Amino acid sequence: DLFTHVISTRIDEEDGGGEGVLTSNDLQQPIRSGSLVPSVIQCSSPDAVGNLGNDEMQSRQIISDLHNPRDAAPTAQGFRATEEQTESQPMPIPPIEAPVEGGTRFESTLRVGDIVRPEHQSHIHYSQLPPHFQEQQMHLASWDSKFEAYACRVDQSQEDSSVEIPLFSMARPHMRAFHFAWLTFFFAFLAWFSITPLLSEVQNSLNLTKEQIWTSSIFGVAGAVISRCLSGVFCDMYGARLISAAALFICGIPTMCTGLVNTSIGLSILRLMIGIAGSTFVTCQYWTSTMFTREVAGTANALAAGWGNLGGGIAQVLVGSMLFPFFKWIYISAGTTMDPAELSWRTCC
Image (tube, rainbow, N blue to C red; front, side):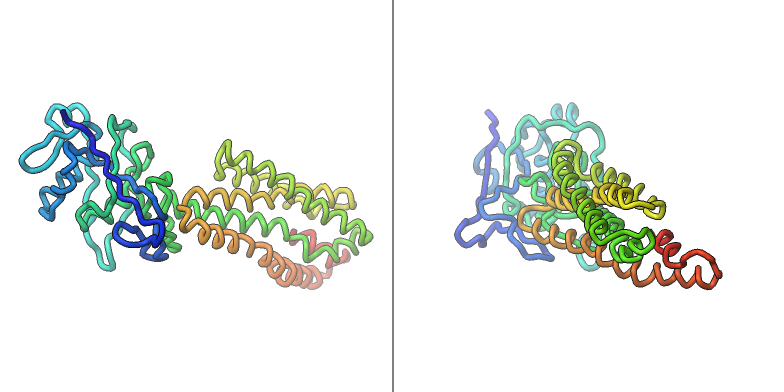
């Protein structure tokens, strides 16, 4: 009887190198010590791997068996699905990408048709495949993914997480999620810190004491503390994308109302609501952590967090050093009878 032979090549945990180590072209990091990088292939004997040759037709037949969820039948040319199985459960073979200058270009493609669970799932290390198919196999999605292939190279044993970080790519889902994660973080912090460089002008305009200004700052941080605790739970329930969008929407409304503040209580409540923007730090880190393997997740998180935090610094320069003086000059030139400084900070925020 036919049976599925499970082949697993594990990486030496001591040296983390040697044959079978998968590395990223950009980061040159091994996927992980002792990892099993799965790629499904149906074999009818333990010696099937020995039949992997350099012959192009035989290699294509092996890849055909790899994508067929049913048992494969032995033939003189290798192993392939029977005609009856092929007709009842056709499985398309991803096309071989044509070589382009500078290497092969891969694109993310959505799966056509329903997701079908294979009856048998075995594993074979990429190093067991012919060399010209190894790169292509690293872009294939798991059987239960809505994608058929990815633009980034992925590790199926880590839920199709990317093993590389091509910064200049916007390919979905990995790099699109990466860039939207840090951009959300950036604009949220831009809104959160927009009023900070103008607090001295706000104090003078509203005749507030230093203690009242400090109290409003405490409320601004408290909003971030509370929302961060809640956003982690909501990310587990609904995902980082929806929570990031909700945080931007919620903090955006009070940010637009900053110019309407007239009392210290109103300022504190306003900054409490704007402090929700601080929760985007959690959503950003959660989002990037789910998109990349553990070998590169630290780098991805550092880049996203660093670029996102830059929004706080940009707010100091943009609002305090550019917009406020610009609007103040406009109001002075217009000859307004009201305080130009007060009109400027209300307009900036």
